[in-house]
Image 1 (tube, helix red, strand yellow):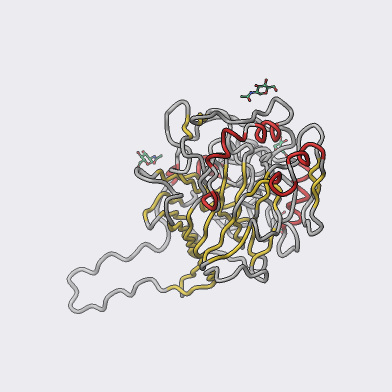
Image 2 (cartoon, rainbow, N blue to C red):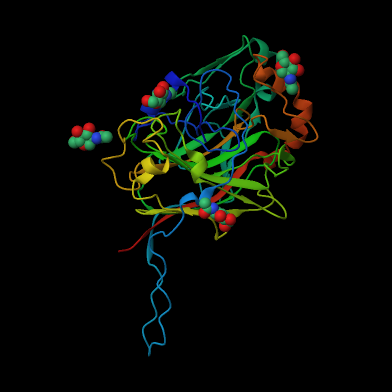
Length: 414
Ligand SMILES: *[C@@H]1O[C@H](CO)[C@@H](O)[C@H](O)[C@H]1NC(C)=O
Ligand SMILES: *[C@@H]1O[C@H](CO)[C@@H](O)[C@H](O)[C@H]1NC(C)=O
Ligand SMILES: *[C@@H]1O[C@H](CO)[C@@H](O)[C@H](O)[C@H]1NC(C)=O
Ligand SMILES: *[C@@H]1O[C@H](CO)[C@@H](O)[C@H](O)[C@H]1NC(C)=O
């Protein structure tokens, strides 16, 4: 999730924390900007007005061949043996019969994901729980537990916080008005394979779910130098549109994105962003299967087995694709990697539900009520909370939860 401007120190700190098995932290998806970029790194410090450029869906900038295309049908063949289907073995299978702390770790933090998000992520069964073989990640209201006055005068801190900052205090703005959850695979990471996640996305204005991956080690440097892969991101709004084009930007649409670049000022995700818009219904009506095939030569993203994007980097790799030789110039930070670098190292899986922040930039129009905050007032959290009459009616019980049926990772048997 992240993207765009990263906030400096936090970021760094986080990243550091995120390193491989480090016990605590993880970053949130990053900052994305505008449209929907994915997660990634954290955004910058201040209110981050995000540019509103419509991101052109360009995904096929580089297209082509990805590895292992199925062999062409054998011509005539006199009883030639059938080509065996590609053989895979499953290397990670989470069916969510329980929420296993040995598999999934919670990020506990007041950090706002680098995107000025509105939630405190905690490890609490009101925000993350399993029922009937399905994981629920559900945002809840801080005021419902602590009272409305607490938002204006209180200080929130959870002792099991594992990522700075740990305190959300009232002051120029109110205490974070939302509680939510973000979990990641703490012991599992993988390099190359096919990821498949069956999930039903949240419905409710200003809710931002994400299923994504971050590098287990920042082998090429801090975000986004070591890459970020976003399998699914969406916005829970039922009636959110791009002002300029009328394109739906809410829960009818999902995006998949790769983030990469020499530093947070150069995150070239627009070249590697793909979308799917449902013609009828939306992604909160029912479960859908989101897939990513990641091989040493490239990527392929699917929704319900339909391909929404594929890419293989040019010979010069992602450095060449991003045009970094001329902008910003300098040495190729991935020179010692493969053609797929930075996506040639292990990544781990993250599931989270954020609320608000810069993933909802200007350039979008919501109906019937506009975005209930802006970045110039100095207290976007308070504006969001005090305009809850605009959005809370769209938050209906468990429909605000991202529901995940399974997470599976396969690798080809060689
Ligand atoms: C991308 O795909 C679209 C639709 O298939 C096509 O019209 C467009 O020309 C492609 N762009 C590039 C750069 O390949
Ligand atoms: C990113 O790199 C460019 C070129 O080296 C530099 O000018 C810019 O300040 C860097 N940005 C950040 C956030 O480090
Ligand atoms: C590549 O490896 C060489 C030899 O270890 C090292 O000197 C160089 O700094 C590395 N380049 C990058 C971009 O990491
Ligand atoms: C944005 O903030 C300014 C300053 O507080 C306020 O006057 C204005 O009404 C806000 N706009 C919206 C759309 O909330």
